[in-house]
Image (tube, rainbow, N blue to C red; front, side, top):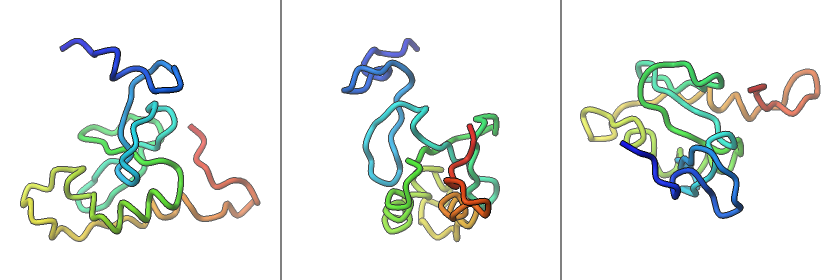
Length: 111
């Protein structure tokens, strides 16, 4: 299936795959987002984009993470088979992305 130009360009003109943040629901270039994957009931960052399966994308911003948690976006993003949203998602590894780095760095994963 061909990718439309709309799915490759953001309003600021940057070209590349466009994804939607599960927190704030804004569309942006994939390179500005962190890919997340579900491994069992744990949600883990996939900074290299190599994990198989369905991915969800999140801005590297604590506010977007908190919005995603508050909206219970994980079951929809990972298409929870039960559809009830009752899966207890472990988001501790994603939460750790926003902790200050012990060496005084930004805490942002190197991509």
